[in-house]
Length: 331
Image (cartoon, rainbow, N blue to C red; front, side, top):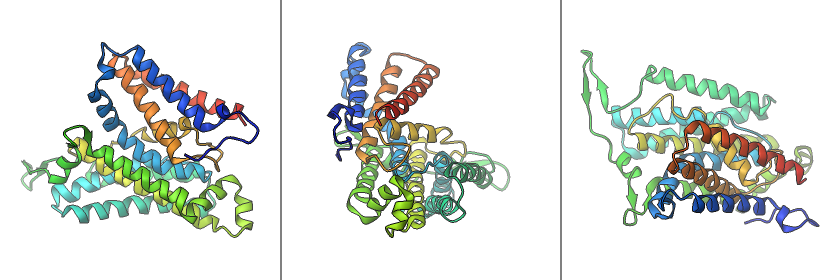
């Protein structure tokens, strides 16, 4: 993991140390309130990873956007659009899985590139540009489906419904492998994580993303194609949304135009709690992984202890505020 601490400050003031400290505190909380030993069973951890994987995929794309100094509020809506597109192509139109996957990736990337173009070329604030895309993508998902879920029940010309077989890809992504010990969707999340790490740490574009987020004017004067980098960053976020949308559809066995509502807040929370700065220029995909695990474990611990969703949401909001305040106090 890239060490992001400021020279002259103790190691404990680094984002990585604070993120790890938060994760350790949550794990200790789980060990203490273990719901009669449920926390110590592998099935609990396996199910947590499965439940958090879709959010984690969104957080992977969100990490690059935030490091570049932007924000993306449209990820939940693009997820819904990809989910219904994938379900429509595979369940109703019987497209082969590879072509359906490519088409959905294209839809997600197109939405991301549009957001990036609005930010880079039209000089719109990222908040406004992605807010517009959030509304547009959600509306498009509802228009494509007529406001209905795309499931195995296919409406016939006479108004009746006929049930079709679910494509094998749906059942495979929703399955578990390695002797039933890990979900396929978790492996998809880890693959996205690795690819984003390669982008941010091994490619020139990754260095440019950090430069643009750190000081856009200095990056421009240094010859960095700022506009192109912003467009690419949002395009990658759109790709992650498409992957997450397909995984969501496979887990639910349907495409729901209402899916992903509020997911953008969870993705941002995971990135911020991991320690990536909202001001841009600082962060790491591995910090995001820590944030994903922290939120995932916290939600799972509260769930196995029968804490209501309302209280879990309020606690998550408090933690996000605390993480941002801690970032400001450590500058």
